[in-house]
Image 1 (cartoon, helix red, strand yellow):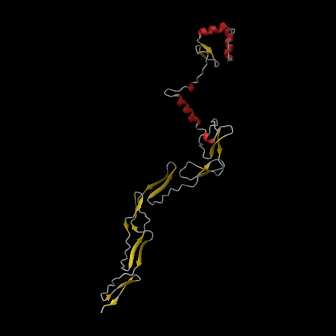
Image 2 (cartoon, rainbow, N blue to C red):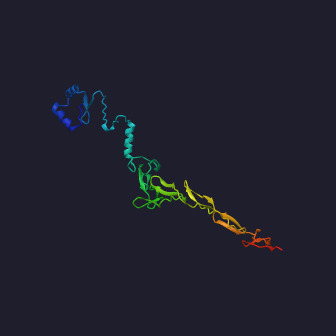
Image 3 (tube, rainbow, N blue to C red):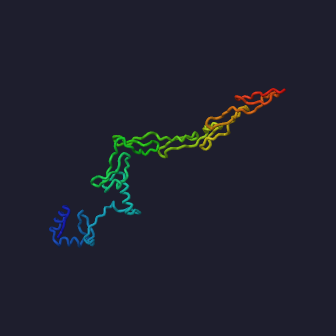
Length: 250
């Protein structure tokens, strides 16, 4: 039995050979070592009747494996927000969403899809310089408040970039180390350091001189004995922050 699948080939062969008898195709097979296939091309007659068709683009290039070709195809399809052909039984079977305002879901058909978040839902705008964003009606992630990069260090310059987030670079100059008992504060390697202790001595023997890091110098009155500088008095003593003369010498 002779099978012709393409009308043009069928017409050409009928006109040329006059019939589809055994002799007609026996002559053709004797001259051409091949058989007709559905696309009008010839294949090797020794192929045991198995017809194969390998598209040119499916053949791996030099140095490329079949897995490389598959990977190339996956890279192309990966640009789609969600491939609906991916089967699933639960959202966890689906790829992560690239849309911050849409979540992967598994439909009733068992296919992966995306579902837009409700208006006002939180989202990540992928910007380290802004806080958590919110989704608007159109499904766009609106950025939140600016990220606070202040490290409360007077010896750093605080900034933020989308590529690296917060940055606190050391700087030089005068500063206040927050210690009321130091003087000459300055920045060293990003840290504020005092150069020397503050001198709280008021040169008064009737006060106790101290320093508190929060409030600074203090000169509290005492009742210590003292010398009023008068050689004609004895038993001088401090009172109300002053040295009082004692008894007069006789």
